[in-house]
Length: 276
Image (spheres, rainbow, N blue to C red):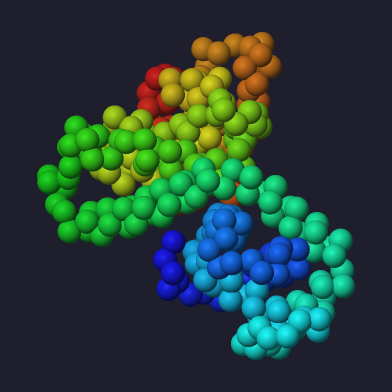
């Protein structure tokens, strides 16, 4: 993490720093491993890089608020004393906040890698958008070139992560939420994408269970322009229950972005050809 990173402290960051001040040794050192861990957990929780020097300074701010201590740093005292007055005499509330924070960041080492990958991914995605503005259609990257440059674990992991966040770790059709088996399904198949952006854009994806991914991949199901499910006529209605299909199902509006609808429309065109 960058030592010179600065940002406006959020409420949760203030509360965690206050907890650390109250319940860690008063002589804790700036390079203490516990402080390093808290910094990494806060980074994963808020997305803000947290230099260890920054949180150490915050401990000194709360030391200044502590009537039982001398010294500390006065900086932004009016804001710090508000948190001190609210939580220093209410340890149970502060403990609950801290416990929730720790529980939410239990896999912070993995989360940190995902966030860093996602930041790289987002940066790359923006570069691709800019690149496509100036590249003529006939010069768009061929699929095999793209697969060399893009289809690597980092970008595919981020594509899946973005879909899991958006769809709350659930199959969008049946709600199955077994984390390890959910599939980040491309709406336009990876091999049929015309350019890099389509390959990495999470709007070209749905989070599905293996069952519905297989049906969707084979164009046995699709969605119309309003997100209503379309089911291949060769699937008998008596099989709907077994396949967890409901011909009245519609994708929730929050998932029907303009970009995703464009991809779904292309998927539907193939479905209509197969379903003749």
